[in-house]
Length: 157
Image (cartoon, rainbow, N blue to C red; front, top):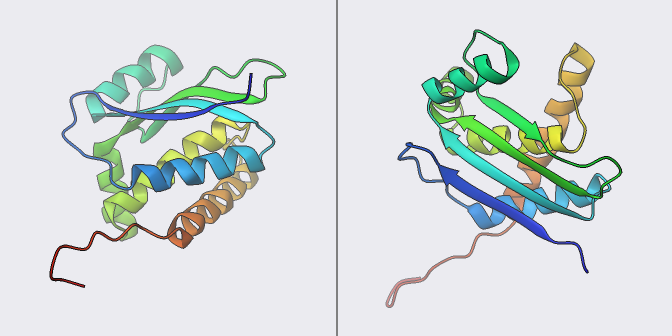
């Protein structure tokens, strides 16, 4: 059986609509293959601050807001990256304003951040955080390098 690649997107109460899903999928596939995996089975779930705060308390015992929580279900010695990435769209919006970037771009960064965790990267130390930020930047550049499909309406160019 050949390896498969699946990246699904879900909203849990959020009205936010993720744009450029296919380009995000292309970058995530590029990333997991580059990191030595042969496939992926990943779910990205967009949630509210309240939802993610509850998860942060319940599963990580952290009494704080966060932008992303990644649950890694990758089996030992598996070449398929598996997991769920929960993202607070509220935190993404705050981060985007703080860093002066568009919300869509910040959301992509956080998605790539979660995938990097599924590939084994950590961010507990300054060196680890720097390494992850560099990898996130590479993913954002890869995303920007992919051409978007241009829809042309009749009579326009």
